[in-house]
Length: 387
Image 1 (cartoon, one colour):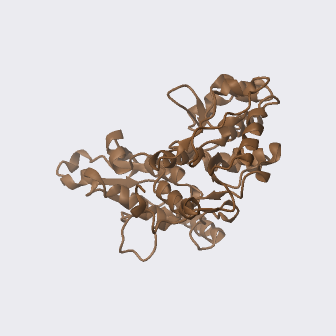
Image 2: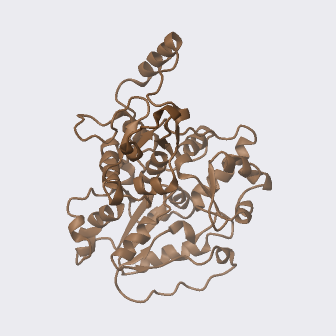
Image 3: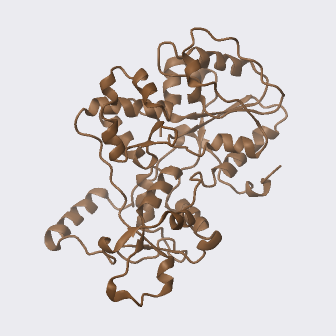
């Protein structure tokens, strides 16, 4: 089996219900805030070791070297390790497995796993077909090996006529004797449990183990040790500390904060990390700056996002639809919202980095902004996914 040697010690996926996002550094949060407030009032904000005016965003080439895509990290190997016993069981009690992942999985982890290990893929039809008044029975896919449905969210739309095909697919899964692996967006899964009782057909979902500060350090260290980036250093712009140093007894506070801010989601942490990297711009007096400084990247404060203040409810409706369905064309977003006004705030959210436009014109929630979006929806009373 390909890559089998990489999966023996890989962390296993865990039940979704047991997922716990990493916490901020263990000191009491209120005490930290109070201490910082007193310090700011007494002496003002601390001066960073490298002023932000002397830092600039790294070139894309250097960023791709230092933090290259894809952002799925080691999840493909971990998924294989998690499913290997079930795949090798000659008579498993359940013939299906459900993998639930947070939004923003641009690398399609479940599909890439299927491709790497030679499993058959069953992709959804074009979205325009999902509102057809009637559907022919689903054809039985050829073969008898493992069948993978990588994105259950692509099989429905949140519309009065958009659930017929997902119901037919669930009946097919329930009746099939093949082993079936299903991937699903966590927000779509929450909706399908309520709308079509999908949890009565599929088993309890599993998810990757959260990426805490130590997992992030190990992953980013592996990224930094590949290709031409062996000599790259990642330093804290305020303290000058080596963020990925192995000789430190504890994970750097920057990584602890990154793990908590990203809620342990690797592609969110990867994008926040990538956006926070800068390269030093020497002053004119620094003409003799050592050449090795070109191999130093500085980590600045993590980007902050804020949701629009005006028409907030309408904007949140649009964001909620994008989390459930994934990337959507603007015209489709209008069809799935209760009023055309719900999408009027998209231009502001695009400018703020809350929403991204893909090369094909589809709109999606920006992975780096996902924790802010999720918190905003929860505060406004929207039903929120487990992660």
